[in-house]
Figure 1 (spheres, rainbow, N blue to C red):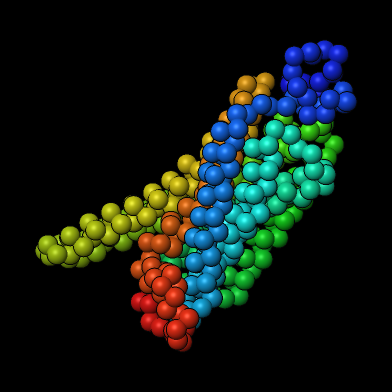
Figure 2 (cartoon, rainbow, N blue to C red):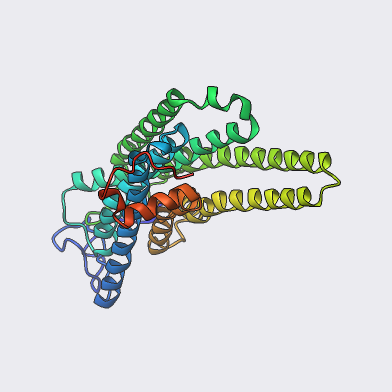
Length: 333
């Protein structure tokens, strides 16, 4: 049974409402000013770090010609989605969550919520397509250049953004007919639209990514064992194979671990909450929401920072060297 969201002023006396003159007002949550300031600082810093990290990736791929590859264009699309999360979604989350009540127009709330769902979905779908790119790179290296060309990359990018836009618009349309109290922008008591968003934006991409990375891991181990058997008398070769296995394990653990750690708490809580009579507090789900969005800040580190050529590009950008001459054709690797 869905919890009661609409409060009648004749039934309550000692609580504050967002709209004192309304019988359908949400309860005003009284947050100490010190905690609110700390939340503003934390969320503001998260937004800035997300924008700066992803902006470095965008500039690097656009400026340096050596990075103009189909795989990097997928990373560029991911960085754009994550940059917009930091620039548009996180400030909206600050305004909607930290403030006790929402007094702006419902249209602004719907637009912000749609951007939240769309950009988060785009980020996740781009991660999914990157896993497909890596599948061909590791499992079918001879067919990689023909399968993962510029045309394929463009199609993947268009699909990720197109599907994300449709999901964002669809979730808003589904939520319009589901009631909520007046004075709050986010309502976490909308089972149909929330569960649908979780299925389309997390469960399906997560299953695809887990399956692909498991296949990559198994193929990488099989290739390593094959090399070891071929060079069974070479100690150096055995050490090299062991290093390859550790690197493959570490990379896949980081890729999937960060993604699952960031998003699993939110989607699990959102899916289970209607089934347990909304036992999980809204403040906890809001915290899980921010944890999921923090994946957009961590993606630059996971998908780019451990590559030596991106680190070289970042150093040239941060030092301002690219403004002192023409370095677009510089050899980064």
